[in-house]
Structure formats: C-alpha cells, structure tokens
Image (cartoon, rainbow, N blue to C red; front, top):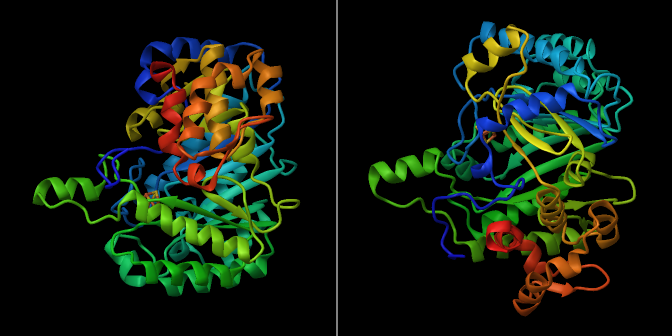
Length: 425
Ligand code: SF4
C-alpha cells in the first residue's frame, strides 16, 4: 500500500466487492424476498439522503438542495417501501433486532417530518422492542426539542458526526457545522439520557496537524461519550476533493497513511488511558459490558439487513442487494408498489465465509469456532498463508486458538483484507 493518500477507496464495507454486483442478480433478489425466511437476525437500515452542505470528502448519495416537498415525498416513499418490504414472505412477521438511520443526515429532518416518518414506518415495522435504534446526527441540525423527540421516538444510540473540533479544519473540509454547535448539541444529548452515545471523528482531514488532532481528542474525551469511532480520511474518486484536484492539477493535501495511523494510535492510547476499550479498528467503548453496537456486530456476523431508501444496501438470505441509486428511479418504483432493487449478488457459501472472516478481522479478531460451525470450514487452515504473511508483517499477535490482530494490524486492517479475497487467494 502506498503511504501517500492517493485518490481511490480502500475501506472494506462488504464482500464480495461491489465490482462483482450486477443487475443480473435482481431476479434472484426478488425471489429471495418471495421465499420463506432464514433464521438470521433481522435489521433495518434507512437512508436519509439530505445534507445541509456536501463535505468535500463525501462519497455518498446525498442531496443538498432540497425543498420541503422533496423531503415529504421521500419520507412517504420510505414509508411506502417499508410497507412493500414488510409484506414480503421472507420478512413478514419477523421481529427487528436493530434499526439504523444513516445518511446523509437523518437529523436534517424536522421534528414534524421525523414524527410523520416514524409513524409511517411503524405501520409496517414496530421497533420499540428492538435492541438498538441508532440515529446519525449532524451537530448543526439539532435543537433541544429535536433531541427530545428522538429519545421519545425510541432512539437508543445517538451518533454525533463531530469529525473534528477545529473550526478551520471543519471549514477546509466543507463541513456544515462548527465547534460551538457540537458543544451546544452535546448538552441536549446528555440531558436526554440516551443509553448509548457515539462520537465520530476523522483522522487526517485537510489542515489537520498533530496539535489540532490532540486538541480534538482531548475535547472528545471531555464529552465522555459511550463510544468513539475514528475513521482515517480517504479520497474516493467521486469526492469534491478529488474533483477539485483534477481541475487544478494540485493534489489534495491529506496527511499520508502513516501519519493518519499515528494519530489514531495516539488517540487509542489516550482513550485507553482514560478507561476506554478498543472494540474494533475504528471504535473504542467506555463500558464494554454495557455498551454494544448491534448493527455492526449482527451485520458482520451475517444478519439480514433490509435496506430502505435511495442507493441503500441490504442483505437477505445470503444475497446482497442495492436499491435504485437515482431519486426518480427509486421513487417511481416504490410509488408504483415495487421493490426498488437495482443490482445485487448471489453470494456463494465460500463468499459468505470470506465475508464474515474479513468483517470479523475489522474487529481485530475472528471467532474460529463460530465460523467453523456455521460454514464447515476451518479458517485457520483455509487461510494458513494469509495468517503467516500477517504474522511476518507484525500484524498478528497470535494465530491459535483464534487469530488476533496487533495494534499495528488493527490500524491498517482495511489494507490487509484483500489478501483474503477470492481473486487474491
Ligand atoms: S454529512 Fe456525511 S453524508 Fe452529508 S455530505 Fe458530509 S460526509 Fe456526506
């Protein structure tokens, strides 16, 4: 892996990679919806694609210039999609274990819009007994009544997209919020008493220095969130940063990978010294006995995930799928009573075995017994050359009884995973 931050994606969010997904799998996905369910856990993901402003590093499907009527039509589309999905034989009557409102910016919606959206969704899916309802927030979109409304609507895990505390860094990266809005919203969040609060940070935003990063870490610590998630800035091709660099010919001044890893390493040390526990290559939790992240853990261990919303990603009965990626295509499908699936992949048992191995490694370890029992394959034997190479590179603490990454391995985990992929195997 080159140490400079070149344009391109390296973050592994799923397997097999999206390059293998296609429209040819859509009939198989529709058949899976029409077939009886498996006994996998069930989650629901809702994509709210609106943001106040497009961050310069953003690669998601988001809309920044929307009217109230667009938001209303989209919310009704989500509720309609929920109705269609909930009536499918593979879904009907199943209990949701977790719900995730992601984006975009779910907190972009007003209290009234949120209440109407949730009421619409509840007609198809109840989640008051789900183990976790996560809701992503952008600090500048929150108000005290909105935070209280989120608590009343059943949100159990509120995740705040802080990213950095330095106003110059926030502005240089095109974030819509400033530090004062973070602090103001945190008071409301703390007062509302969510069971689980998370703060997202990004290491290596443009303009970051070691000193500004350390200040961000200290200010995050002073908030005492239940968990902290730290990403390392990458430059996917469809970002404003990459687009601007192509226009001007000047590369985007992002710190190299070693510097970004060093910053995360320092942050991990600082949080661990304050009593936090490392729970993945990106996450620290304050009280692992009490604070869980069901969305991550269940999804990474093969739960079904129903995707609602434009461009949303789902997983059902061993198949991956994605919804229509354009506004009109998505809305015309759901308004016409059709599932808006646009592409997918029929994963083989071997694909699923690799998927759960690599996603497990993002938490720093794999559960050999669980994988062996589920897939009938021993990951220690199946990936013997991969474990040996990781060990030789100082990325693996031990292979037996279960492979466990070193801190060095954990901080560069996404770059280590392609060696497990079929084409590289
Ligand atoms: S808030 Fe998130 S989804 Fe919205 S533009 Fe920024 S990075 Fe993208």
